[in-house]
Image 1 (cartoon, rainbow, N blue to C red):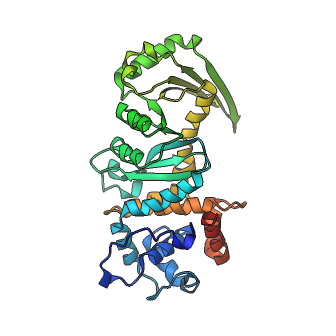
Image 2 (cartoon, rainbow, N blue to C red; image 1 turned 90 degrees about the vertical axis):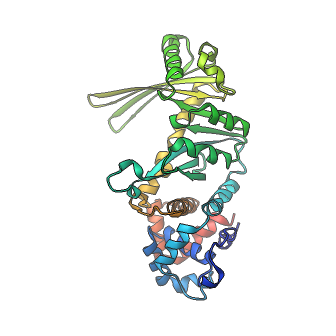
Image 3 (cartoon, one colour; image 1 turned 45 degrees about the horizontal axis):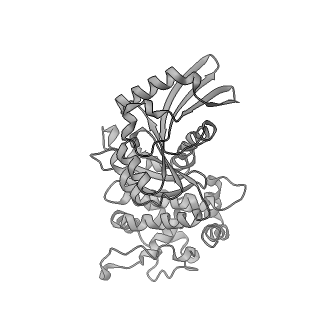
Length: 366
């Protein structure tokens, strides 16, 4: 995939007589702008004006560059599925050599999109994240009258799960979701919490009563005055838990006990998981911890480096298309292997046009 052609597959929704700027040009300008530090439509338009001579090296720009209103309209009405496939197809290319990968599914709310006085009305986008390669495979916006649980099935349906382990927090702990993952050739690792009342009680009571006889693996970490002990118990004796009979291909029940101490404060927590993967305590200890890489490897960067939480775009497809653009920019920046942080790479791309071209070449021309 050549970077100059990455947006060719995105169909143009606009009426022919109203087109002044090719859609692929607008998308490439917005991508270069976001890589270089732009976080909204006004900044994209300003980047296009200031960098017009540079952009003409690889774009035609028959009518110059567009206003921020044009960028706004494009991202509002552009087909979010077609635009998302750009990110999905490129990520798939980078994963082809992996026999096994873990797909972490989790949602993130864009806080500034909340309606006045309604804290829970912000737009939530559920992402599928591959921990090993730090890649986004897909995303789905949660309907405003629903929750993450309804966005997970269509996201899973769009993914190739052959050879993959799908890990999801408690919202995805549903028999139907487990069945869907198995039918698509994957395995599941699902967090079990009190939203599954009877099953949670059965699992927690049995694991606590029998943990002395259950194989376990323990890790101890100490850093910056913080001490943490984490113990992972894994059993295949789930037949003693009646409510698990409905679960497809379940092979392991897992319990994690963690004790964190900082100064005089001690916090203890016990968590439970179900999995169709036949692994031991050592493996599950790593896989469960790996699930939360989506928080510090994706969500943190979107908020802190790309300022996503301040984005107020919420109409039509705007929020989801902007989320795709930020994730695409983040993955492109990650493909450049140098000593700079993602934040500094964005600044250097803005200052040094040669560096920006190198970043794009490194990401796509492999």
